[in-house]
Length: 284
Image (cartoon, rainbow, N blue to C red; front, side, top):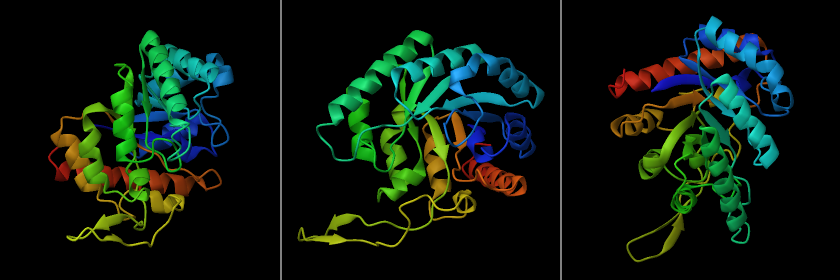
């Protein structure tokens, strides 16, 4: 697996600061943020101006360009993202699922959109990945499996983020095992708390489990791997046992106003935990 970090952690700083800091923390590569409002890194409206700089920074700091994150499914914006990815040399573009949880009327539109974008990605020779996201049409394992069944393009993949699965009330270790056959990218961060889920006893009686925890991912420092309640060692072990060799990119949001020292600490702490997880399961 290739250890990377999304530059959005350094969204309050310029691109070179993000590249330099991620390289100093020991990562193998970088996921370039194209997230409007959270960073001014890969601004897609002027990607042509930025392409050379991104390639040069990747070369200077010896970071592999692992992915790009651009959450919108707007077709014009996504085409710019694919064009930028091809020119810069970024193999994966991550987007959000769109829609709304448990909205059956919206589901066909979401699948049509993702299917169309996957075909566009196929034409450009890149991979489009989508992850289960709290509040979105795809938000847990059953909806992820449903999307996998309905979108057949080889350019479509699953981006798994254990924090969203955890917040959906599921066990991320079990969830990753269920969908690993189509996983082509992994966002990773920790998350505090446990969340309400329903279960049945031997007599079929419904009951609720633990209800404490956070619906949001938490403060940036608490998203650092090892700070929360997710079994990230088990999560990474499942990936390794299933032969996954793609990106494992830290994605910490909400740090735009943080000092550089705080962002660097989160990056370095998380990378150390990721390395320990890989060593614990024999992947490094």
